[in-house]
Image 1 (tube, rainbow, N blue to C red):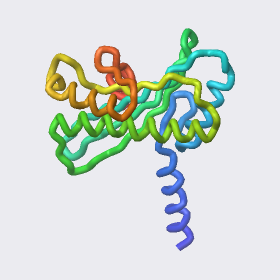
Image 2 (image 1 turned 30 degrees about the horizontal axis):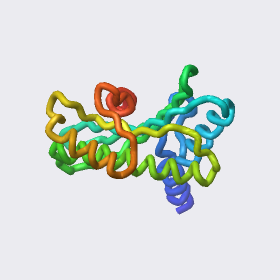
Image 3 (image 1 turned 45 degrees about the vertical axis):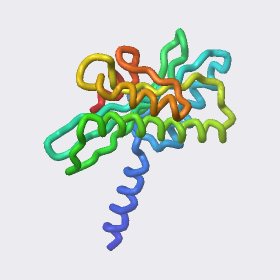
Length: 173
């Protein structure tokens, strides 16, 4: 019985560590916010760009969605964090996947901004990067997805400028 409880506690801790970082390892969302806040606090006069983007990959039995938070200190590099959401046994058409990717990024952006209001850090530029472009299969949904993100009050970038989705999140799908 004790072993079962220990396994449940370990699983709960693992479930909370949804984010990954090449620099800091596995993290909770609060730990991500702490590291970003520390990164920004170390150079408060710098200009920061916060980019949120998501990408997905279809497999035979699931779809993996990866969302990334990238913090760029202009002229000096940056840090990033990512998390995976796995949807097993669910079929998505391309339009639904593009919408779902954008919604994941916007939800993460809202959580991020709320946490930073609490922390008192509000000096940064925030963009949502969506994995759609004027060429290829996603050209049919670009106006809809961009309109949805803009209508939610966010600055939006599409490919080829959408490195948050097309490069960083894509790297981990």
